[in-house]
Length: 467
Image 1 (cartoon, rainbow, N blue to C red):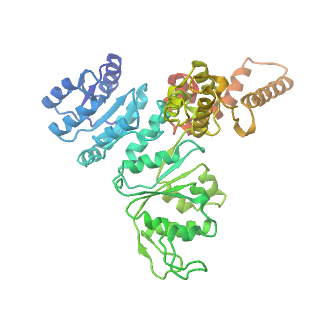
Image 2 (cartoon, helix red, strand yellow):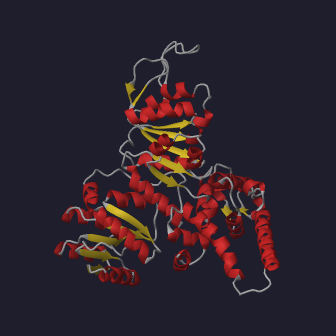
Image 3 (tube, rainbow, N blue to C red):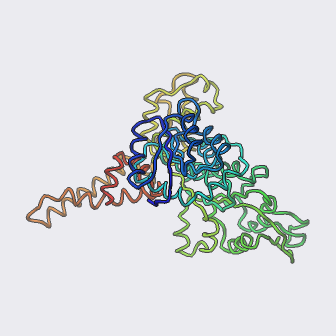
């Protein structure tokens, strides 16, 4: 860790957290002060202004977000790393807007904290500038909910990128809520007062995509009887959301790239371009990197769209969020009697067992289905629709195929070896675990804490296995 922090103030009412952080920072040669309340922290900060504050959100008395605001008012910009066990999008956005340079969710390990503090050092100047900006009102809207570590990372990335003007690429399977993320970014952006213009490319006629996007002038083609502005012109000064960006035809990709680079567009049939300034947020369920390698998507456009990426994990990888979403969808349901219904423990258990190919969209449909059959009574497993399986295979079939592959591997090992050194199980794990860990780490953006939570192992165990 860099050694140019002079004084770090830790604010948390959990003694174990304070002890661990103080030991980490003191071991790096930094001066460390500890406070258990926001009021105590403010008094200490006024006596000796800290160079960095590590602060919990939930504190006895004044909460951490209010303390950040008062600290900025009394002392000027102070870099703050926020820690919390109760993270959501609202908390993340408010923390960033109050000047937080980073955001951690409990539980975390000291390696993660050390890396965050390194970034905080590099961001002190940016934090001071950010603290002076006008805050955008923040609130949770729609169905973008979750308490899992994976969703905490999503909330954090939304909060970090929202106030910038960067292009954002949102990836994830169908039904994970990519448009909800796009709308949240727009809602917390400096363009929030302007329209959010969704462009559903898959729904546009292939022969009219260019005209729909860029507009056309009278006489440009047979049916062009008058001048007409395109969707991107409507997004001037606002945010354009490209749903299923992987479906943009190659011919249109080149023209879209010019629009993004030159900040002007040319309607079909027009001789002159017109200025146009919009922020673009794109979403796709496809692997655009693979499409680039295969020549189906322009590399230069990909890098324009993916200046900042947010990956939405599938619902089956954040099982702990399923009860939260299910209860939320039941409260929102317009089915007669749904307001009086409730999910039984057995129904929740069944919901958590399923793989949810259609993700949150499929879960919402299942809740409505259950509410219809339950007629205002308790919703049990018997009221839920049949489970939809991955790739047409049931979970039992997929597990059976995996078991069959393991049996075949073991049989081949036994056939080829006459003597054994007692490492068969270890060698099997060396074959299976890297593939498992790589997939999970890819989905969590290399966040080891979130990966360990998904895998159901301690983060120290995961760290040891990765080494």
